[in-house]
Amino acid sequence: MIRLLTGDCREVLATLPACSVHCVVTSPPYYGLRDYGTAQWDGGDSGCDHRRAIPQRDGSSSTLTQTGGPSGQWPYVPFRDICGKCGARRIDRQIGLEATPDEYLATMVEVFREVRRVLRDEGTCWVNVGDSYNANQGTAFDTNRDGGGRKNFTMSPKVSSGGLAPKQLLLMPARLALALQADGWWVRSDIIWAKPNPMPESCTDRPTSAHEHVFLLSKASRYFYDADAVREAQSEGTIERFGNGNAPRKPAVKQGGTDRQCDTWRDPVGVLANGRNLRNVWTIATQAFPDVHYATFPTALVERCIRAGTSERGCCAACGAPWCRVTETNYTPGGPKHSGNAKALRYIRDGEREDSGYKTRHDTTTGWSPGCTCDAGVVPCTVLDPFIGSGTTALVADRLQRNAIGIDLNTDYARMAQERISRDCPMFVELPPAEEQILEQADKQLVLL
Picture 1: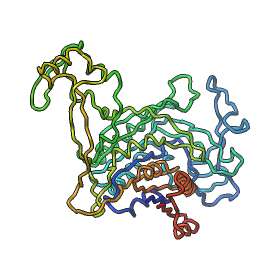
Picture 2: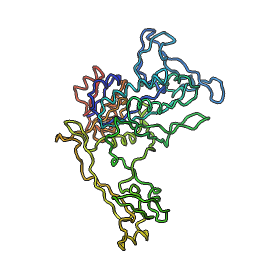
Picture 3: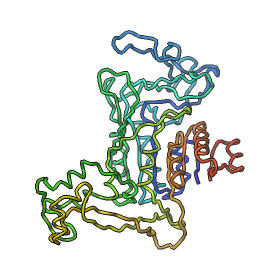
C-alpha cells in the first residue's frame, strides 16, 4: 500500500506511530535553491504577483543585461517576507528558503528528529542533499513560461551565508551531516552520487558541479543492512589485483583459523562470485522528468537505498521486525581468468596445499529467518519519504513490493505523484472511491493499493 499525505512534514510526521517505518529515503529541499510555489499572501493587493525582477550581470563584465526570462526579460523571484509592491505579508511553511544556513539547519534537525521517532530502531535513513553558493540566484523558472497554466517552481531569492562573501560554496551537505550527528544520528557513510550527465552551468571560474551527497544515517551502531541485495559486479582490475600469480608476495591472510602465506593466495574478500561489496561512489545518470517537478532523483539511486535498507522477504505482521537473509558460503578452486594458471593447477593436481590455490567465493541465499519470535505472518516493509515531490521513492518502493508513505506540502505534487505511480502500473494500482472523495474535498490523503 502507498499513502501520499499532504501538509507540513513536521506536522504530518507527528501523526505517524513511533517506530513504524523500516527505511527512509528522501531528498529534502536544498538550501536557497528553489521556491516551490506554496506561499500564501495576507493583505495587500489580491491582483499583485508579489514578485520582483532580478537584474542579471553578463558574467564577463559588470554590465547589467536582460537575460534569463522567456522573452529577454529579467527573471523574477517572489518577495521573501513582505511584498515590496503591495505590502502583503508572506505566509509559507516550505523548507529551504530560510534567511540563513543556521535557520535552515535548525529546521532540518527538527524534521529529522521526528523522522528518527517514526523510524524503527534497526532502520536506516538515506538523505540525498546538494550544495549551494552564497548569494546564489538559483535556476530561473518563470511561473508562466510555458503558457499552459502549469505552476512551475521559481528561482529563489538570494541566500545569505551569515558572513561569507558572495560566490563561496556553503558546504551545506557537510553542515547538515554534522548537525544531524550532533542531534543523535549515526553518520555511517557519505556516498558520492557522481553524475555522468550533470546540469550544464555557465560558470567560467570553477569546475561544473557533477556530484551530490547521499548520507546513510542510523539510530545506533547496529542496524538492518542487506549487503547481498546491492552487491556490484567486480571490475577486471580487482580480479587482476587478487589473481595475478606473478604479483609480489602478500602478507599472511587468516582464513578458517589458519595463517597462510602464499603468492597465489586470493584475498578472502577479493573474488566473489556474487560480486563485491557496494562502494560509496555511485555513478548514476540523472533522469529527465516530463512533468512540472524538476528536482527529481533517479530511480536507480532510490532502488539501491531501498534494497539495502529493507528486507526483500518482508517483516513480521505483528511486531514489524524484518526477516534476515540466510546465506551459505562455499569456495571453488580456480578464479576468473586464472583457472589455467600453472602454479594453481599444480597445487590442485598434486594435492599439495590445495586450499591455498586460486579460489572463488560463492554466497548463496538459502532462505530467510524471522527477526523475532512472534510466529506471525509476513507483510512488506515500509519506506518513508517526508519530501515525496514527484513520487520517485514511492514509485520504486511499489516496484519492489514495499509499502510506502510520502509527504509533501504542495498538493499539486501529491496529485502528480499519484498519477505517476498509477501510470507506472495501471493494472495493479487503484484509488478507492472513498479516497477519491477525500482527495476532491480536502486534498489531504491519497491511498494506492
